[in-house]
Amino acid sequence: MNDTPTSSKARWLALWVLCLGDLMIVLDTNIVNVALPSIQADLGFSQTALAWVVNAYMLTFGGFLLLSGRLGDLYGNRRVFVGGVVAFTLSSVACGLAPNSALLVVGRAIQGLGGAAVSAVALALIMGLFTDPAERAKAMGVFGFVMSGGGAVGVLLGGVLTGLFSWHWIFLVNVPIGVAVLVLSGRVLPADGSLEDRGPLDVLGAGLVTTALMIAVYGVVGGNEAGWSSTRTLALLGTAVVLLVAFVVRQARAAHPLVPLRLFRLRNVAVSQVVGVLWAAAMFACFFLSALYLQQVLGYDALAVGLAYLPSCVVMAAFSLGLSDRVVMRFGIRPPLAVGLGLAGVSLALFSRAPVDGTYVLDVLPAMVLLGIGAGIAFNPVLLAAMGDVEPHEAGLASGVVNTSFMMGGALGLAVLVAVSSGRTSSVAASGAGAVVALNEGLHAAFLAGAVCAFGAAVIGAVLLRPKPMSHGEEPPADQEPLLAECA
Image (cartoon, rainbow, N blue to C red; front, side, top):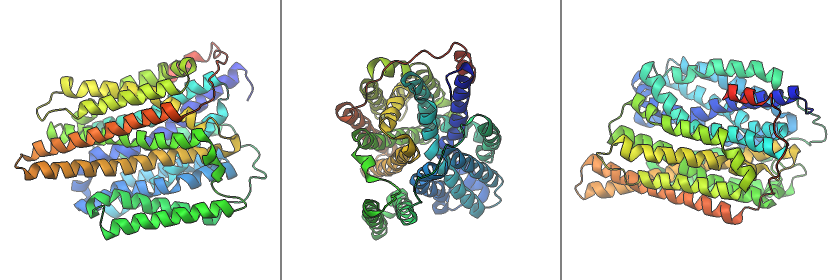
């Protein structure tokens, strides 16, 4: 693309299309949680089977992220993005109209496949669209809000749709969005460039890593129910480790590896994955555990839980879209990353003292606002650090790696923190405390553990990242700002 105003408008419109497509995927990670009781009552899920409404999506989503990213590099990021949106939209129709539990679970699994394709290449497409540091920082601020704020928006939207309509609409709402993204993608997304000399797909490597990730996710999400020291859990996680080792060996020897191991010799890429795992664990914990506190301790219904997240969404949007890029351009990547993650840690620490008879204004709202500020500031520099050193022809793969670290960090972190919460709840209940008091004490322990994850991510990012200096580019053309304001 050239630098004319027209091409500038096209780039920003393409960004919003990519963000809208990715927002569907991010929303679906959390939007279902609030509606699970309604789904169970309507379709007759058992308590054990109900978990598969979430697990089926997580298994295919987590398992196919790396493969989807590499397919984008080999066969075109736009092709993979569009294919993912088609699969996700059609499966959303199937989920929304599912007459029984089996079809809903199958639809959720296909949603995960489509979601993996969209998520794995959206970030790579944005990196290719925006090469100027100032524009890239602004674009990453927008995309960062989608990835970080989508969790809060998902809880909000899930509560509103379930409370006002029915659970079917948490899936059907994706359909008009998906159709709009498909129509606009053909008009504004850049065509895939020359794909010659990219090498063949490493089918064996793809099979090893996809199977390993799916088994790992399955072992993690079922760890609390089966027991972390149970034969089942240890066998699943052990198998995943063996397959991952085999994958690494394969990548070291393959002529055309799926994931070139030199990627992880890039300091910022490696450190960003650690930061991403800890950050995702803290964020997943905050959204999931705070919803439990509101529902099971304070007695909020689904609609009230959704509305409780509105201030966090608004604050996160304000900081992500209006301030994060300016902070990054002025102070670089490390200071805002450390401050943002630190504020998220403080938010979790505040939740850890919320009492059984707490009030929204005193015990929930301050933590929600701090979470919005922290996430709004931090996510942009995390993404810039992770993708800044990657060659353009491997951007899809790097995007898949970034998303895999977030997803696995969130799944593992949530499982571990739920285990911490359950253990503390059982201990307090055994001492004679009431059920609600015991549950709240368990949540306190988990919130503290989540705060430790956030503070740890802040320290690791601040100390170990060595990002390239951010230099100011030219200001966006005057006719570009109204488009941004209109889209926002």
